[in-house]
Image (cartoon, rainbow, N blue to C red; front, side, top):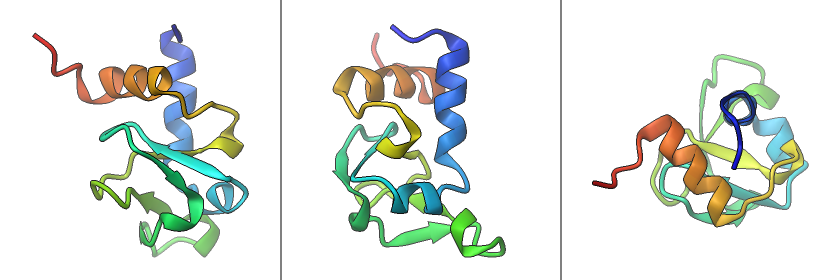
Length: 93
């Protein structure tokens, strides 16, 4: 289980991340918990910034909660669930 500081560090890789995603093979969304190849990301936000600093939108749910494996975090279901619980709530009763 990751501690709060590790989760916050991981979350920082979900913004202004186009350059990092271009170095990634696999990406994961911690909103919908889907895993996909980096080239599946087709939509971006923050386009007023330099292109390498655009923020990815998940190809499955459209939320800006995408992290690439080049950030150093595995895209395991456990990791994505921990991130979802931290940033979006567990949704479990």
